[in-house]
Length: 274
Image (cartoon, rainbow, N blue to C red):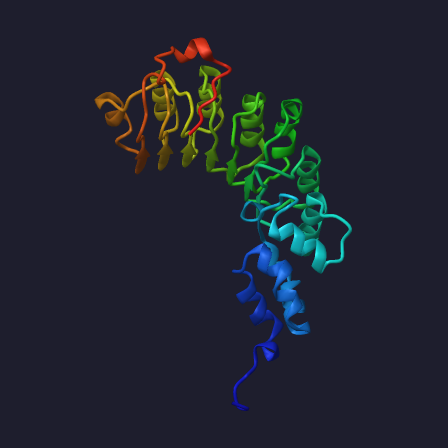
């Protein structure tokens, strides 16, 4: 047994390469409390390049927030404080940032990330207030290396945002969102992002006319996901037009909603709950 090398005796660089595969929960609540060598390795910016905050439960009553508050001797838990801790440990090297959806993040946190995480390649936005949406285009345009963007709903400033992406994000290739996809939205995608590779509009209101315009205008699409959309059915024409797309997913699409309401009449208050 004495001849075996102990984990705490490993080089910090080696430990960091191992710890980079751990979750943020492990990096904050477990690894730092093992030994000094593990603390040093867990602080390496390599471990904080991917900040997937959606894996954590930030509700005040969750085990994570209670444990974090106790172990770091805090009076109360703050999502903004946790974000600043994670971003600080990345030393500006974070390439992925996914904000939580149901609780915690604010527009101020997004502004902070736009200043402190300039090298992001993948971003998943939090749910924002409608009053904050006009400022999204300017913020997104700051991430010059951005490649993929996820939004849980289409912002009112969508057209402006797409324009900023086209002007500032030369490597942009993937967009995921849902909502009521109008003609002006499709025109913005086709005009500003004609070389987009991956597009997901599942659970949206998407008329056939808009879908066809996307297919015709984005000739380099490799992935198009429009599952559970309302507004079209995947008939022979749609399938034929999309035949050049490597992955075309359209399961569960319907021409009308269950009440047979013409969705144009319901727009823009369309909400599709699964």
